[in-house]
Image (tube, rainbow, N blue to C red; front, side):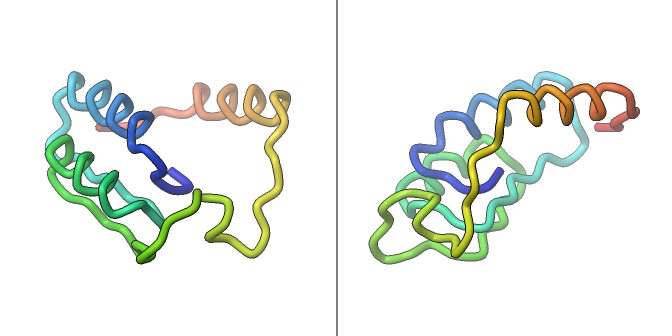
Length: 88
């Protein structure tokens, strides 16, 4: 994920992957609000976060360049991901 603001999306993703019974589940993010990171931790076997700022005002504020991603780009990327085999 690009970062954890509330952690709700990551929690949902981790729970969905956990249902597939992976051997080891890692949550990796570059930046997170401290409270959100703590809330996500019980849903993963391992959590990696590069930066937890003292004051967190949103994920976008932690990047020098944070361009929007178009719906078309998301659909294209999801289509490409669906064509490859992922092992969990």
